[in-house]
Image (cartoon, rainbow, N blue to C red; front, side):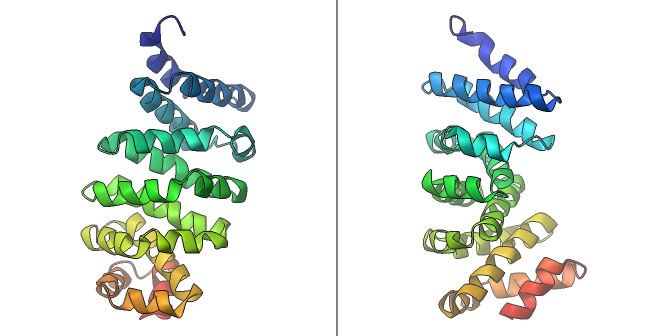
Amino acid sequence: WKSDNSLLPETLLRLGEGRDNQSNRLIVCVIVGLMQDHKDYRVMQRFGVEALSKLAEAGLVFHGLIAASNHVIPSTVHVMQQDTSDTAIQERGCFLLSKLAEDFDCSEAIVVARGIPAVLAAVQNHYYCVDVQRHGCETLANLFESCPSCCFCIANAGAIPAVENAMRRHLSDLGVQESGCRILYSLALESESWKYQILQTSSVSSIREARSRFPYSPYIQQAALVIL
């Protein structure tokens, strides 16, 4: 592999389609090692993130393994920071981080790796892509739930205007609306100051619209009760 980089991307994608847990644990280690060995090979980074996200899509996240590796999360964030204009990379990176953020140890690692600014940058720069908005907001919402102390990092990084913009632009997408409401709900509960900031934005009208469109979503209804 190292002697012929042209084979690496396709190989990684095929590795990411595995289904056996034991094999996939090894695959994660191989993928991360290759990404680390080829940091300057942008195609490798792109397909490495895609391969890891394929594993996550199949429900094979291995939170414990990834948290202990000290490489997966920094590598993913590095990929996102390296090519901020590539929508596909940002979408896959946000998706992978959203799954990893379900775990406390992984959430802490995301914060340390400066994953929050990377996710918010993706949400702000790719406002037209509903998948980036959905997965980006889901990452922040999951961080709140698995690691409540992350709230200060999320709020101070500019989450409120980013979420406001995502909800306003994608009113018909349930995923964006639910994750956005989860974030705003957590911020409003945590601080009266943050709740006041939310009330000064168009998030209020977005929450009202979401409440009307999705009356059976507990996340949206809960946020409406606390904020409106």
